[in-house]
Length: 313
Image (cartoon, rainbow, N blue to C red; front, side, top):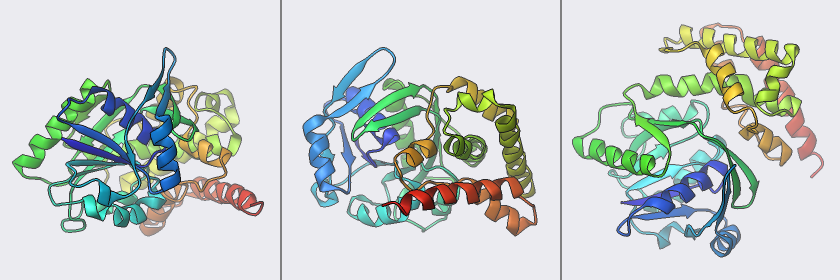
């Protein structure tokens, strides 16, 4: 099996390094980066992975030109949600109807690509609660283990199902707690609830996930954000299996030291995914006539933070 990962951020590097370390000789794992200079640097340096108990340098091959790679069986998309459309054009030479394309974006905007005929691939949607922090280019810290769920939005042929099961075995072999689910849409919304409650607040208050629980005021903000999201989801007839607020609080506790992706973006003066996360709740709320004032206010505050550091460039 030939496996590619596009996006050398924290999650992309984590998946690439873990998978590369366990695949058989007949399998291939490679990382794709649209920046040639960074790809060269990563090829020279390797992927540096830190955890509580180890430090490793993993020599994952990195390519900047899709035409160099040839056919691919599985492609993990670990790019930011706002870069997804551009990345799809960039990697078109790698894609075929039999390619399992694994969407690992935050939010729910990428669910549009599950529509039949939208892309010339077999779309697989995934969520992961693995905690990874980017320390530098190709340098990450695994900040906490989680669970990765994968699934199809619509029925697929037996070949695609077998291929997904084969990939699942590789993920499990590499140390990722993972499973295939028949209800991936509900899993993605469950992850959205968590991101709605955590990401923007960590960026606004410059706190780790666990530190959100140390302030009664911040905890009340978190509660209101998630409750608005739940109201919108129920109005949209989304299946909810677990209490969204309790799940979000559990993630805060279980990943207490983790620096959320949005806080990492703000600290590094990069665009955030606020429009994809809280923005999705605000947008659907407007469509359904459900007010979302707490999410709307947080979106405004994060955009002001972004505007401030863009003005200093």
